[in-house]
Image (cartoon, rainbow, N blue to C red):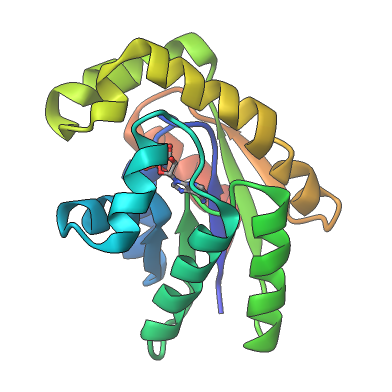
Length: 189
Ligand code: AMP
């Protein structure tokens, strides 16, 4: 299996690039943010719970997020591999994912990070807000909080994969095509 963690701060372009990687490598895309938003739209209990955190730009608790992600993987038969987008966001989530994949006799192949500076992220997210309809995209103080949460809790997850020699960072500035090419080169499969 080819299991990719697509990593980077909010607004780095993970969703856009994940769609391309899905096409190129024939993988299943799992975005925890998208799954939460589908649950919010469907007014499920999980959605109601997640909304309280997402609206503030905080992380949904690990147990909830991990349980949800694992059940999505379980639902998928005969996948050639997965693109994890927006997960793991804490070292605890990364450890849980490793254990879970190990039980399934597979593992993370590589984490690739998109590197984009904070001011560019804020600009991109505010632009995206015009189409995304996401409340957490429309308010600059919430965006800044999401970036701060990323720097405080999520950025360290890169070290977790770097220690296992599974981490690569690429420049996230440029055209969508240029960034895709960099990703294909980094993944190299
Ligand atoms: P995203 O679409 O990846 O930017 O995620 C939107 C929001 O969903 C985040 O700001 C968090 O509140 C929540 N979320 C998504 N993925 C996770 C995760 N792995 N752990 C905790 N919260 C998450």
